[in-house]
Amino acid sequence: MPDLKTTYMGIPLRSPIVVGASSVSAMVDKIKMAEQAGAGALVIRSLFEEQIKFDTLRLEESLSVGAESQPEARTYFPNIKHGEAKEHLMWVEKARKAVAFPLLASLNAVTPGAWTKYARQLEETGINGLELNVYSVAADTRRAGTAIEKELYEAVEAVRQQVKIPLAVKLSPFYTSVANVAAELDKRGAASLVLFNRFLQPDIDPATESPTSEMVLSGPEELRLPLRWTGLLYGRIKAEIALSTGVHSGLDAAKALLAGATVVQTASAVIKHGLPYVSTMLRQLEEWMTEKGYASIAEFRGKLSQKQAADPSAFERAQYVRLLLAQK
Image 1: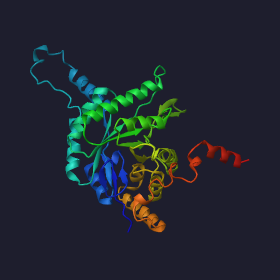
Image 2 (image 1 turned 60 degrees about the vertical axis):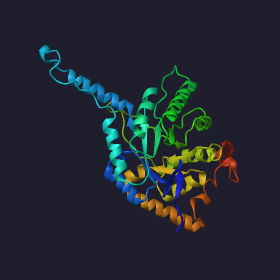
Image 3 (image 1 turned 90 degrees about the vertical axis):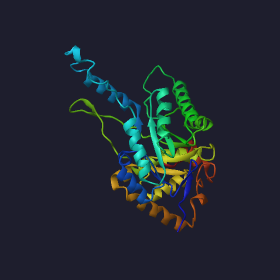
Image 4 (image 1 turned 90 degrees about the horizontal axis):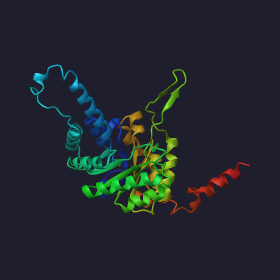
């Protein structure tokens, strides 16, 4: 039987399939199921600074109702404050104690101080690594791309100085130069880059003339964008690559590994099929490796990256032009 063991950010994993941050990674019983199904690791659902701010504001508003109606009783009750990330941190600690396989925390912040503050707190829960979930839409017409990138680099550097656990950065595919951003994050100590963050897109209901939004699961066709950039970056940066989005089968995982990914993250597939489906994906990967004669993942990782491929143009514009000409 092929050996599926690998190492991600220095963390030994029994398989390269990682359950990504999602609703299924927010419950201890589900995390146990992921471990039982053979997942190499799991990324816990993100801690969002914006959600903490929203909840804090809502608590303050509710406590202020009627505050002036009985002035003599204003100091009778104790001062109540929002617990900020305390509930999430306690839950992460509970999850860490409930399973043996590696757990990675996920953090999304919007202010410099929050990145470091919550990163330190998450590290104290005993997690094996931390994924910075960089999810923001650059919609401000006054902000240049260089300013946005500079803010990202400063946040990563600040967190890297504050925590000892390995750090992954989950990127957007919408930077002007993904390759340059990847190289800069590599210089700043990111142990892994997660390609890519999947942005939810709003829709418009013409009947009500209002914007709408819904959670739409990814499909296998979305694999191609992260697959291409995995193939382009492998061997050109020291940081490892976790391919995310569009991984729905063991063969999808094989494609990612051939392109140079160290691990793949899957969320939509397990939401759709259930966490036991991880074992199906692993079996599919094993069957493919057996058919190809591979005893370990190391034997074929990066085989079809641009650096190793017989036809490097397959990842770039030359192949695009060739395909267009072939249609004539």
